[in-house]
Image (tube, rainbow, N blue to C red; front, side):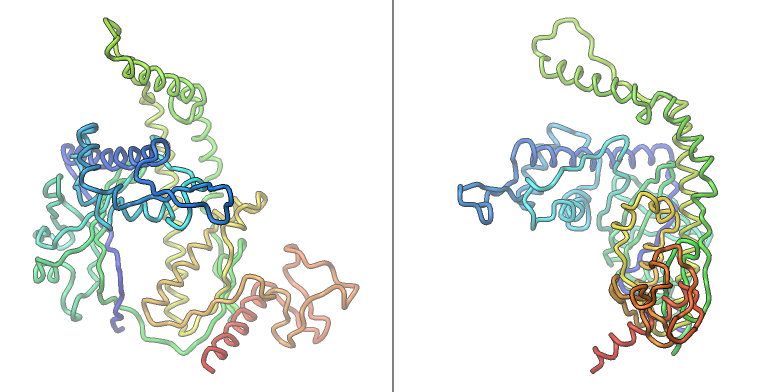
Length: 458
């Protein structure tokens, strides 16, 4: 076992705030949500922070608008919003205006290459809440405890909070220095921290480290091609298969029962609640718009979800989290084994988002999540110095005979069936070799990938 240098590693820990600290985290998340929604509204509805430019190719003098993030994240605009919404002060200000926080998310969201006329604003609400914020913090805020598994971190606006679950196998600088020893030795080192909350209500803290050492087996000389599928999530060119355990499908009845229960109870999943909440928001807006003309009228009360809805929503979130964690653990086990045992890995580049649009396959594809598996293989191969080659999605990996190179075609041999997903096994009409479709595809992926690497080497 030796150590590989890993760039940009994230250490995720469980956060255990007190009730007062949890309230402060909620206020910080609300502050980020309010700032984001106000900014989106001002850009799309008021035209603020926009630069007019002539529309490309237009002969009528039409103009389009591009967002100027320099003015959108200026101190003057932030102070103006704080006057209108004092809750914004409850968040670390670095989470709003620095490049590691909300600003970075909005840069990705707005896509400055396209004018705002061709984009839709996204607002955070109770159905799609904002669940994290990021800012930069120094390592002198970390304090160890008597228990080696427990640390204390003094977070901005929150105070000292207990955390557990930091990766004790990581090393920094040399193979004898763990995360705590490194933090104590470098108190002025700046790292990005992310405070987040999941839909169940648990809190987490993520440290984003620029460089660390991670233990991993030494480089192997083996080569392998990887095909992905629904029945078996990963098929190797050496014949090894990893089954798709279908965690989502095994809990389908439970999910449906909770979905029906949510739709009946008084909350956002209920159609009548959504209509009433929409009318309530309009009524409150009319009241505050005409506040000077009001005499003795009471402020319309907010419509909130019932306690039974909140209880059921939490059960639903716990179920989905359990499914997600099981699938994620299995995909990590597969990707680790593949990267550990092979020095060169060949995969096929797939249009996952396009495949999911197929209504007949979308449920099975989301349950398998082989897009995530390919992502895990990709970054773990980069971490540990493995060679990863990708072939095109339209390369005939399934149709080609991996022995003689014949490509399946019923035009050449009229007795052959048209090529469909139903064909799982076939005999090559040229050399007579019997093929398992998935293993044959994995062998061809390796064959084409080695051809690509040979061209690059030349």
